[in-house]
Image (cartoon, rainbow, N blue to C red):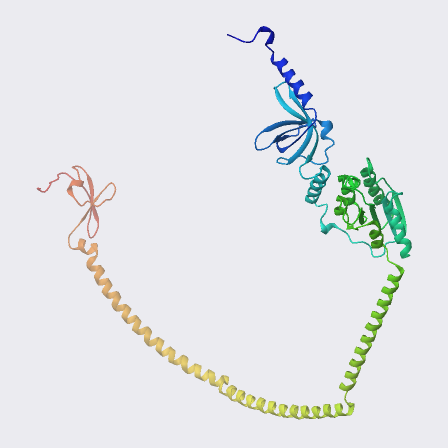
Length: 449
């Protein structure tokens, strides 16, 4: 039997509303810890994710109004501590946590945002050491971007007054904390670079908490420092404080006072540097003069008595003259011997002797040619006679002279070799040793098989 009555049966919507009301009344402010999964960030600006641990999972929603207050970026797998209220999503009947605040487990929200931004900007190359510019040796005009009422400007003025640096100081007043401070600082860099009126820019403030220094951790400030064409010194907080601006600047000073000392040169330091340069110049000139004196002394010792040098050179001239005369005599002797041998060869090659020898050779060759020609003619005559005799023996005319005749077909003069090539009445021509005769075939006798 059914134990429910008609009055106790609830609709799905009614039951969901009751559960939602119950959860929202009893869990209106809860802190939950877990690991992010299934993170979704649609264009609406809301954040949807799941918090999970080893035993359960919880759907979470962070609406755009709360998500805009996050100082860091949510990532898959991040361990998170959140504050919110439990509710039920009517359409699916799922219970979920409406997150109003979140921070990474083990780190504050600002610290996590600082680490994330530092890693992201470093990946883009904003902190590369290769792009950092050196400071000018003796800047004449220095701009200070800070609060006009803060401790930083007073510390910088004290250092400049104490060191008698003679540096012209330009103060660009900005807010250094609170809403809008980052935008003012970034605009200061753009204005100073547009004016191009200073040699160095110092940006900074006195110490404070991470929240107080947060304007110097904003991305807009880091990018303004990065695109600055004028070298930048970052002097934010105390020596242990580090900001994103410190990493993007060309140089980081631990305090504003230290930044002022970096851009100034005290009179005593200048006097000491000039004295050191004078001493170095004196030592260098003295060393150079001593070197030149030693070189001059060496040249003086190397320079001998000119009369001795001339006597030595005269002796060499005499020796070379004797060698020249001997060489000329030897050369003339060799040339005479060569001329004598050439005359002997020319006499043996006189044209009359050459003509006589050639005439004798021509006569001898003529006799040989006549003798060989006669022998060749006799041999050719014998060969001709023998060849003619063989041709006569083989000639068909000789066969006809012995009484034979050649039978030709009268129409095409084809020689008849067999009686089967003829027919009765065929016209043939008989060729004899002397003359021909035309005949008609009247009878054909075929030899027996």
